[in-house]
Amino acid sequence: MEHIKALQDAWTLLEQKYWYESKHGNLRQDHVRLPNGVEILDYMLMEYADWSGVLCITEEGNVLTVTQYRHGAALSSIEFPAGMVDEGETPLEAAKRELLEETGYVAEGWQPLMVCFPEPVKQTNKGHLFVAHRAKKVSEPRTESTESLHIHAFAPEIIFKWAMEGKVIHAVYQAAIFKAKLMGII
Image 1 (cartoon, helix red, strand yellow):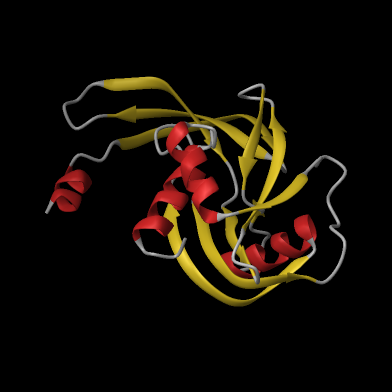
Image 2: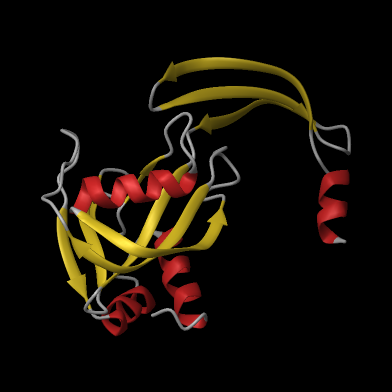
């Protein structure tokens, strides 16, 4: 019932203007009217492509991570292999591609873990997270020129501890770790 009420509270879009457009994302200004009649002339949104991430469990039972610098936080971030879903690609296909490209690993089994809106207030994209089971290394990583990744495999209890302590700084990956723990996956 809460979902139905939320739809009744939807804002009315009156006008849109794009300030910036690129292959990495668009900056959009919306003029909206709230259900109570109040208008917001400059509600700014970022349009990004959906992305997929992989909580990868190796044949040895470890969780594969990639650590990389994140400029918004100005910190190194412990994360999972992930990337944008390309046009014409399913989220699962993107997850498999990103795992291979970023780590050189392939997995025998796959299961969906969660779909979320990482920042529903100001961004339009969804994150699709999957669990990859029994992964093994088959090649060297083939990262993009903009990526500088450090690959590590850790015991699941270490990853869970780091998420609890805030050492995993990315909220989506924290949520994925907590959900996987509750589901008995890690």
